[in-house]
Image (tube, rainbow, N blue to C red):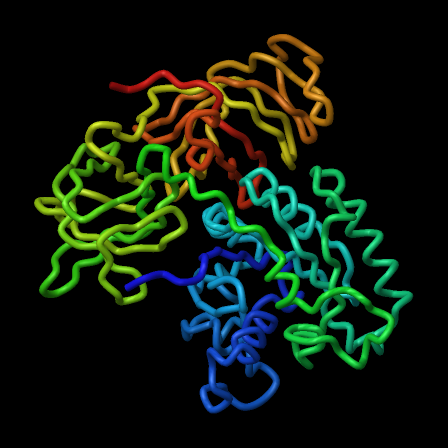
Amino acid sequence: MAKAKEHMNLAFIGHVDHGKSTLVGHLLLQSGVIAEQQLSKGEDKFRFVMDKLQEERERGVTIDLAHARFDTPKYEFTIVDCPGHRDFVKNMITGASQADAAVLVVAIDDGVMPQTKEHAFLARTLGINQLIVAINKMDLVNYSEEKYNALKEDVSNLIKTVAYKPDEIDFIPISAFEGDNITKASENTPWYKGPALVDSLNKLKAPEKPTNLPLRVPVQDVYSITGVGTVPVGRVETGVMKKGDNVIFEPPGASGEVKSIEMHHEMLDSAEPGDNVGFNVRGVGKNDIRRGDVAGHTDKPPAVAKEFTAQIVVLQHPGVITVGYTPVFHCHTAQVACTFLELQKKMNPATGAVEEENPDFLKTGNAAIVKVKPTKPMVIEKIKEIPHMGRFAIRDMGQTVAAGMCIDLLPAK
């Protein structure tokens, strides 16, 4: 089947309860993906769509990344609906790293929250270069232009700190619940002259597909499907996978021939960057591979690091980071504890200038070059060679303490 429209993955990020799920539900509703009758009655009608799991409905929280699809005149979007609660930031990390662009949802009644900052920073560190800001819940302030302008300024100042340019970004006053400025201009905001959300999405630039880089498919899940066999599922980050290709999964080293590839229940002959696919590999069983492994061609296999050098920024850490510290690194779909072996340089996060060689410790706000050793084999690539596979976030004590990228590595093999 020919893919007519260009495909983009879109993340919705921002503080919990700022209306991300409601907005996504409304977007799907207004673009005709969901018929009205599929929605449950009452206040939570839109969110219901995204939260398929019973547990989520009971808690009113979005946990899983819902790969819903909708079309604008120009693009086919897959929505990676990103969780907002504290304990789900790590989903956000693996989620946001799958997105080509993000909609940062900020509620007008709450304003900028700590999580708004964290998500904006992470989106940037994880390589999301295009941002749209949705200023939500305008109905709660009677669509006040004054309040919109005040929050627009706050958010502008915030995103400037992570090198987004506010003058290149749309700040859209919306009501996810009422549907204002989602698919068309709202009469409630005559003072707003910018695009509605769907028009803004249409203006995004499709990412250059890194088809010329080596194939990398981080495994998100592994399923057993009757009649097919073992089906790893993941997003093609770089390169092209074709039926008949010989692929290898690292770190385990399991390899075989690609027998079939499918996306959204349609069989494909090949898959390219951005495609979320399930594929079956001859001779690779369910116990051979797991989430966090990465598939590549056997002639250019994914790099397994024995240790690696990274540039990091400490986002929030209650104490100090010293040699020996072993938090969990979240890189593509892998989660591996890594030990800090050396703190090589401390840098000014704004300019990159070296402030201190071999510092004794790092604290919140510091940028640094460090050497780390994974406690078990993990795939990571140099940022200059395969940028999509070189970024990571560092988690500890239920929060994201740092984020960074791999600048050099010592291969395990």
